Image (cartoon, rainbow, N blue to C red):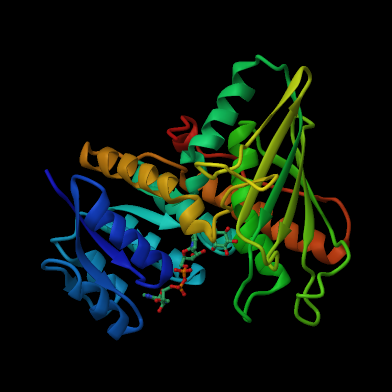
Length: 339
Ligand code: NAD
Ligand code: ISE
């Protein structure tokens, strides 16, 4: 059976996902696309066999030839399309963030709970990265004792001019927030944000880098160095410190070159290169689960918890204080973690 997917938003990641859905993965085809920029949607559809171009996201969701929906439009538009997919009873894969505010995430949780089954999966692809998975296996296996700390770095080479200090938290650190919750199977109790010396490459008034401190309920502390003008490459780092040892992500280059007294390896150019296999694995798992009549992956609860932690991070950025993360009670629908 082939799953017919409709993609809302054919920008950078939308096009990358269309490529993997149409050329890399199995059991799926892109049946329809839409974008507020109709020329962009048409251009993407031209490269696909028999894909329909819809005028808007609602028309695509209503298309009887679309079995499931992928949302890759701008963050503030996610709520509308995720709610519409739930109302139509269609499975929806939503790129991060699930939605940009706590209230919007609340509305999505309420709608999914009312539907009585999981229909939403959120694109936190790091959970599918081989290195992060191996790290979690060591941490949960207990072979190096209980975890105490995690050090993480999320370094982007550069960002467009519209990027702000707030987006370092909402757009970038949101991944590290999800990793912390998943790695330690725990919620975040509080957030603090420190502002180191500002990079001379950052625009006027832009705090870059940031040091984000996440305090888990267990007491584990996670420090995230988040920077978006690192220049040299896209560099993702992580190390968990446990009572009897440490475990860290290795360099992602497949080979090391030794030459003239040095050794070197490639650092990825961007998230597409660093996480290419994670995205593939994430989507194949979702396609297989949806075809079998269910879903898998990070849930709407995971999306909600990450957005609330980000909102709290923005408060902490302004206050300079430790700010508690206050979550609603988790609905029973999310008791069983299916990721
Ligand atoms: P982008 O600006 O390149 O593309 C977004 C597209 O959505 C644009 O083509 C835009 O015209 C379209 N769009 C905007 N509003 C729309 C609407 N109401 N209906 C239909 N189309 C609409 O942005 P991007 O970098 O591709 O990011 C898109 C989403 O993917 C964001 O939520 C972003 O956070 C997420 N993202 C995730 C990762 C990841 O690593 N998981 C990486 C990049 C982006
Ligand atoms: C981008 O939107 C992503 O999600 C990438 O994974 C992240 O590394 C980058 O900082 C974001 O801008």
